[in-house]
Length: 435
Image (tube, rainbow, N blue to C red; front, side, top):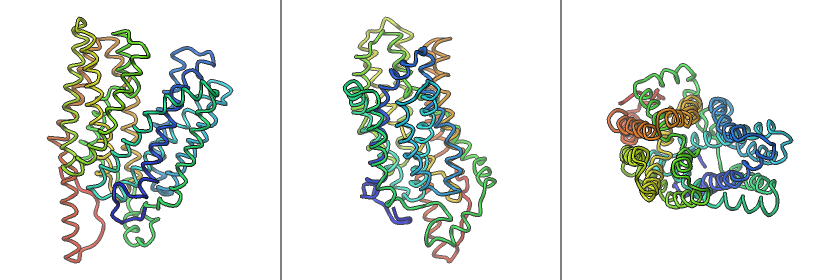
């Protein structure tokens, strides 16, 4: 993608360098997901030990956030973007040939870190290149293509492993990952300040800012508010991407794997159009127009779910209804914090900003399943759901009443910049809190 050129959300460059890799990476990850538990079990480990294969994937993503952000400013976005899938392919290919459980955990850590590198660098490139009123569509449509890839992956992976052997899904995943990145070598252009062709004067001023400026920016009221909202959003999800709601279904209603599979497939299928719609709405009407009703409706849905714990005599059909409702409303919140983060990222040091922001977000996502599980186990599932709803309300109030709409703020900043250019002023200013 050429730096500085208006980019349609459905351009050939974006299809080949953003949406296609997102789909294939998600397809590959979901292909191997149902195979990994059985492979872990083959090492004769306990259930709690086997669960470490998922913990290490998340931990790898957490550890990679800071160095990936630093490297994006130090060596550029493109090297990090290309290194992520390459490491993913290596880690995936080596996984089924692990000789010990420890080696298996090592490769899961590598794949988790590599996945974070690709996602983080791709968000940075979107922040560098996308116009304000196209940014949400690019981020959200990337999320939508992720879901498309996840839809067919589990069944394909299970079939391949059962029919041709455990290594086959991993080998195919590694091969597809490498193939999907071929267009990016040519189409993705470096967008980091100091490495863009023809922007030397502007880049010199941008690159002069360091960690001190980033820290000062993060300590503004606007950014502290955003980081609190980011943590609240992670807490509100309660680790549902890791199966917290499914665990409740199993323990409270003794739901079997067949029913769970159907529920999850149905929820995923219904939720595929959601990111495409929310991306359009966020670009058309503002970020707040989606985030506030999205998290508010999710809070209501979770409160309705809590009634199944407080009143266990409610019929199973009520649980099924609220399950679908929770999944549907949660889908409207996915990717919204990434849009806000790219909106608020400072142009002078986006990599460093991403290093801190994504570290905080990933840390929240890593610990939140444990928090929800602790409340559910030591108090009650009902209060656990109320806790999730309260976190969602914090996000809705924070965006609606405190942070404001970052899209409208960007429009005002563009108008001010145009006025300065007309009056002959130049220079790069640090982002200011306008909350």
